[in-house]
Length: 488
Ligand code: NAP
Image (tube, rainbow, N blue to C red; front, top):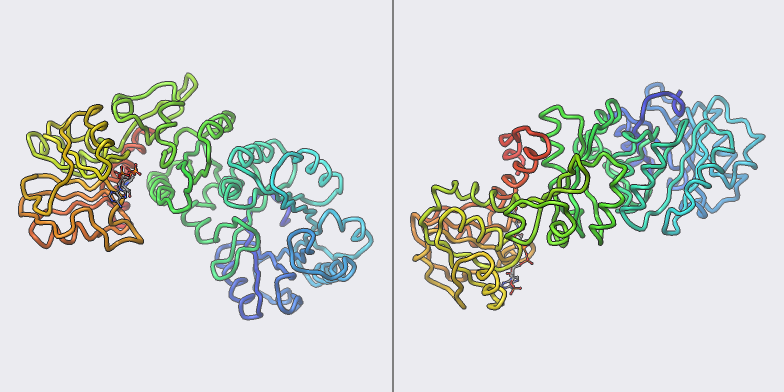
């Protein structure tokens, strides 16, 4: 039975609006092995009878959402419910009826269709979840679905906790960006239906993840079948641009590990760490603006993190609290060929932010002689007071005196790809020029340095190396560098 079986099912929302779109999206659902949710309120012609009569089709859940529940159908309930009942009698495996229309639907004949009772609350906050769940369950439907709008990641984590505690077929959804984890991890916490957007259509609800990403990036089938023993995430604000989920989930797939890795957007790292208490989250990659807070909030820190004053890796300790580490510094050493390649070399670091601090730490512990130059001189001076090296007010355009040059400014980063920290720079053969900017992979600085014979090292190498260390810390396993490099 579609709604009451033990299997967790992916549901692809078929949003149309035109007949051709509907067909493409239904085929997409079938190819993904998913249920097709026919969102009649979003179709130009809300009549699914021809689709329902097809001999070969995916299982269908028919929905006709009214405006008061975030849909587009402004018809009276009687009209909408008659449409749903006809779909049920026409062979739909299930229909979705809003709790506010449940009484009115009581005497209608839905054929053999199972009934899902649902409620969508767009007002921000998840305060009354327990009473809403109780209200939905009292309807006596085959399954319940509640969609709410979390105001932050902590509310989404609480929603997952409620999901884990519900008996019987139920799906709790957090809409919007903060709710993404309730979709990605929902099946692991017991949700029966996981809604995804069709790859060729609009999301039917804010925050829906495209079906291809649910399957390929977040490994829905494995998560639904085996659950997750532990999960990990990348925390920042903003976070939707991060490619870390791609990297770590690919590694988990290669290594056949029962784990998942998710994006976690939060304004406040402390609130997130507190909300993670009851969850099996074992590690976090930390990015802007939380790297300093990660160090401050951790129970323990490694020497790199303490010296740099920031951590990019948090690991849950068996004894409670978090261990803060900085894998950026060792990643920079690895990207530059190891400490032996740096010892005794003259190195120039451009910038004085978090990555520059990691670079100076990496170079000084490797025995390089470091010079720092930054737009804001005092910041560079403060950096060298903390970590060693000398400071200069300006450099260039001839930078041939340095063996190693590291760009740790944001100059050259997409979309400002025409910028460079060394306009008209003069480079030489035998020199290593490393750009920490990794979007684009090939920056103007690297192209100009390589064209003059220098060895160009891309920021993606540092990105892969820091993730490689995180994976080792969390799982004790070697990263699939070959597979990673073929993607990045
Ligand atoms: P940050 O703390 O904000 O520091 C930014 C640095 O860029 C500062 O030194 C700043 O100078 C300088 N800067 C910004 N705009 C400038 C301009 N118009 N002219 C001259 N200098 C300018 O950032 P961060 O976290 O250190 O990140 C720095 C770079 O590292 C970014 O480009 C990022 O893409 C890259 N990154 C790479 C990786 C990787 O794995 N490859 C990971 C993280 C970050 P002031 O001090 O004068 O403001």
